[in-house]
Length: 426
Image (cartoon, rainbow, N blue to C red):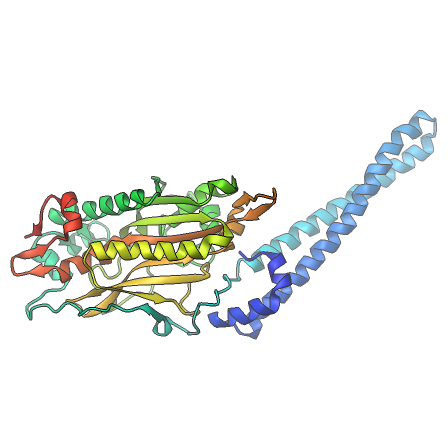
């Protein structure tokens, strides 16, 4: 959520930046409305402070008047205090109403894109930040896509998932289940070696947690909602992990805070159809390891580069061809200021599959979370939050199965072998 002080001081710059997201004149007028509403809030506050001061002064005088025998004056003062209480109560109601209006407006405003965010309307306008500089893998004519490989080796069963739950809930079995577990342990160990604290978090969150990371109200239609308990199945570990420090005031020397967590993730993926969602390309439940950092504002973009470089190392160790995209304004998520997407090449499908997003949210999430740190001057400031997929398993498994298939079976990358316990899946 943008800070009102920033909207006031940088309104024209913010308006120009939000045009990258496709915001037109009507949408941009929301910023003016926020300032107008905040002006009303301030005027009510000033008036109410004056009434509170009058009430306090009169309350002090009443006792003295009674002691002095000035009963009539004391009773008149009491009536005046009651009248002031009525006016104060009305002002407080008006204040609450205006604050609610301001918050509702602020929740509709996405983060301001960083200057590095390219212009563009959708994913076709994303900028390739780093190309794969080697030959892409070429498979034999009889090479199979991962959903066929899953049947061939009895490691992946989509029909069984439909029987148990429905479409988009695959079942991993035999060496497929072991491969999935191996990847989870590999990613967690790699994160631990990079100084991330591992946390095991709930898979259900309340509305405050979802709002804190920007998933509500923006992604409400994509999350599974347990209506009776008003809880949401997490779309990513980013939500519970980042909320660990909601409403916290941390010390500057605690930064950066580095957290990692493994969770299943649940997404409705409403409106997704066709070949692009076949097999593991898009599912409703998948496993993912998330990395989260809470940093000093002066260091967050350096941290972003470090996180991007870290995800590169994971893909290199998995021996997968990858490229990095810098997302354009039209494809940027609601809360992000700058995002890099990683795609791996699927040789059997002859297409690129997104497997990671690494983002800097600057103060957008921390303002919602009230996540602050006390700087060296003793001032409370909003921290910057970042997160990245490191990595999402479904499409990683799809690419591993397809790219590493041979006549003898699927060759396991060397980095995974101590986790799988086998060198080839056959």
